[in-house]
Length: 446
Image 1 (cartoon, rainbow, N blue to C red):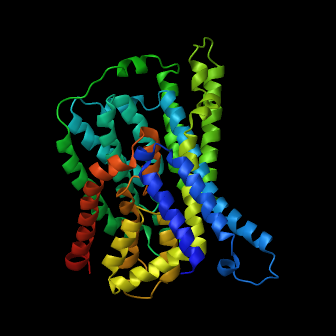
Image 2: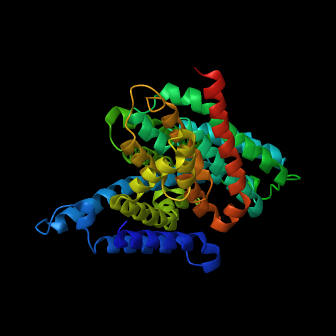
Image 3: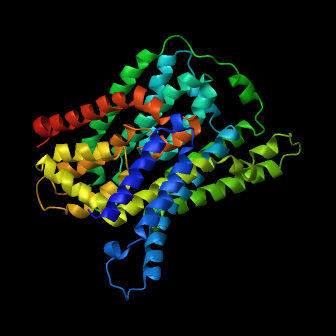
């Protein structure tokens, strides 16, 4: 590793440490992430030829611009998907679309609510995706759980359940989508063999966390919120069906058109925007609050700090990827593990809680080609475990997954609180899922 590459790695590590210590430094993580992103690429520019190849005659300006724009383009698709999904959920929530869902979930028992939230999140993240599901569930929790301390624990369980539910579904997590679209796993293979380990990785943390709750929930303010809805019951149901149905349609839209997923999100947002505008323009009497529920006003409620954090983190990781650090990390993992697939993928899952799992999985796909037979074949042990570990491993730290980052921003969860209270619980579930998969592969599956 060159001195320059080492400097880039140190910059990333120091920036990451500052993000982890946000509760102590009192500096917003988005500011640190943006500084880290720019500093990493600035160091990269000191000697770009060692990473890009070529010689002094190479048009560096053109090449570097293309490289950065490529990483920015990949990052932007995630950011626009996130902004679109957050807006859609906000529109549904503000217009009463989730009212009947809240009524179905409502219970006076804190423990019963925990289990209902866990299973609903697990199922929804497999059908939609873990990012969108996390946004929806946090919006529901804000209506159901007024106590912020209790809501933090529920929110942490949402992160765990969303990542577990997304891991076994070919459309539930971006890394599983990557493996599925590239032919490393099949839809039926990953569902049939990863479903049970993923379920175990959710059930065990939920079982532990239920003992943190005693007594009943407070319900102050919930009835009042539901009583001021402007739209009729049928209109609220229409908003819910169009919004959630549209989110479920996004993977199908991507498969049919081969357009990026964020374009499907924009399509759904456009349709929902138009429908809600028609609902409000046909109202003969408008309340003062009705205009606040229109999309033009709800756009201002998007958490831009979270968006900026995403931008900084993903672009900084893109710099590490461009320097070849992630590839070296993969080679090192392969060496220290002695080729044991359970160890390699288990470590990758732990690392994915620190850095973005997308480039890690992409690096593995490039380093380990599909074999005709054996553990590296299609639906082999390595690829299925990679889908599980990269998805579920993101729950170990609050910034280890897109779902965690969003929940962190929405509920103001600090890195330190999650590390102290939740990481060990998520780790127990993570290891239990790997053991479950090993047992299935050793004693049940041929």
